[in-house]
Figure 1: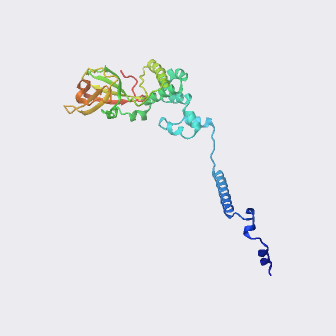
Figure 2: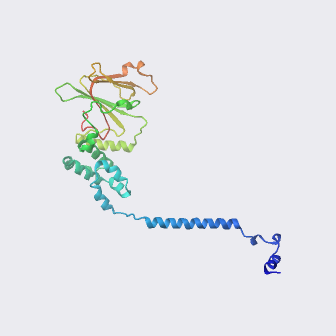
Figure 3: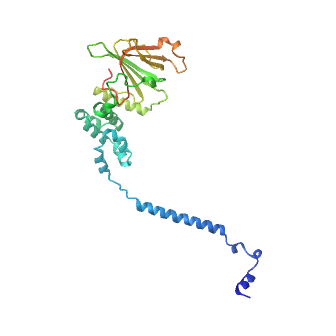
Length: 292
């Protein structure tokens, strides 16, 4: 009898064995798989750490680079890292930008703006850039008769209406309609900031528009008496060619609520301005210095 056969005969039967005598092959296989995954993840982590050669540049270096950023690249510069975003959200950055592109006005207002909140300084500087920076001025082409189609103002609420006579030899009139959409809610903090901005702008002969509003500016050679439509909804608007085919004609219908019917029932709430020599739509940043 060989040694192997003797070992098999001496081994107890399976029903006499304890559970601990059996090898759990499935658990051992799972442990091996988990161990392989851990080794693979450690190797991958070490490879990534060895291949990463990034550098954390100091704040002062980013600030020096920011002094050479063009106004149209400010948004992209702010997305580079946390430090660049922190620089963009500082009063000193906007003051330096103001001094760079509007030197004459910066000499008068720098001491005043330095004391103000970041949102006020940023608002004033951005509005100033749209009046002095050539690229921003080209975006708002003043030569076009119809600067922007006004149909997107449909269903907005008329907040304010005013008009004035233009200081020209020819009898021309300015008509301004300020619109705001009801689904935009303004916080109390924004109200406080707007009041603070308004005092600074008024002291320097600057007009300020609510950040959530649009101002429709029309220039016409005819004087039209406009009714008290503040607070009413712009239910319909049309922009057509005048009867003489030389200019445009704008027609707006105002309703007291969104559920009102269309123009057939509210003929007394219609504004017709004809002819229109120029049509422009302003936001807070590209509005002219004076809206009078």
